[in-house]
Image 1 (tube, protein in one colour):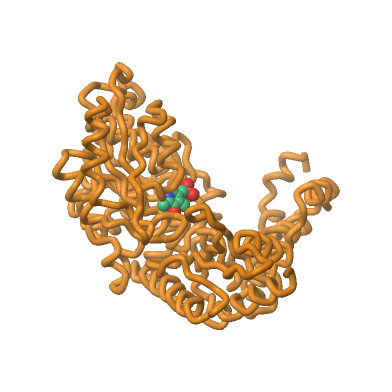
Image 2: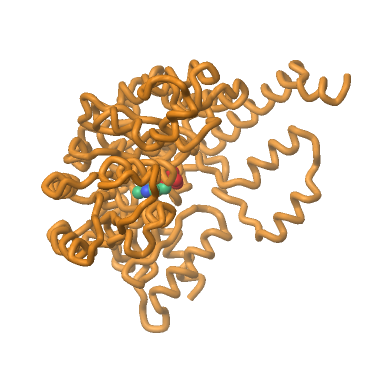
Length: 468
Ligand SMILES: *Cc1c(COP(=O)(O)O)cnc(C)c1O
């Protein structure tokens, strides 16, 4: 067999594939049964580089090493960043999509995935209160937010920016706690410092809607044309939902584009219990929802919904005219509406889950993870050695060890977090709130239990004692 015949050998594929699935199923089982004591086997970057440089080239050895050397998101004590442990079915759908590799800008190259993209968006949009509406699926919340903002500019600017460039100074209003990618999107559009108006937050880290009018007037007086306002659902650091209703009313009163960055918490709409957090989302012009955060789907898979379907064609509309010699609104040629040209088959991962388990499964995941966060917050509140930053809305909780004479709280929490990473029994992260270091958890794994959370509190207390 030539080397290329070997590369495409179906029997080799079969052998490796079966072994890999067995390995992953064992990995999942070990994580779930508590048979794996570490969430991460942390290795210094330089040592890891040297180690991989010497790695065994045999594929099964490589597969094994990759699992061993990575963060174990399916471990119930992985409680760190906002990336989910993918549901096996969603991962299988992704793997199949990766092999078929038939996703893309034009229908004939993506017949199945484009059709499923339409179905997924159509079936999920009513939960956001969009009876008309349309949307796209793209690679990540960062890209979806940029896409929404570009669209807002095309729709709301008083000049044809897409064709002629921009003469005026535009801006978006956003919470100072918004995800940094909004700031980045504004700067990519060339609006600079003036293009992002950061509105202060209240004690709950939610945007102060009472200040919107003040900041708006101030900007307009300086000749800055405010095109829109962005709500966070929730904010990244503290997981608190902005008052989406008040933001929507303000946007409507001032003729502004209303975008909701619901990358993390948009799926609350699928839960009876937590749906109220998204109240007001039906007023939005566009909503970003990551499926790889709270919908058990592998990264990166993001939905961008538009309340008015025609707007979903306006982001890159002018450019599309010469790329596709057809009428403007063909739903099935998604390349007209996404930043991406060639695209991963993204829709299949969401479709596989909702088709098999029902859309309700997304609500159950929210109920479980958000519920666990409330449980954890109560445990922190009753612990005399710890403080809670704010009562959580979602599955994100910020808390910290109190300082004491001889132990500065910032220093203590930073060191405890670092020691925990190196030890690897739990994975949590940290953030800075009003200049102070806080520990931060996101409960992403619905298999995490209340006992795991109690063990986390005990572990943090132990580590702190050991360090100081
Ligand atoms: C995670 C997150 C993002 C970034 O999304 P990616 O999918 O990581 O690109 C943006 N905004 C919010 C509110 C987020 O939580």
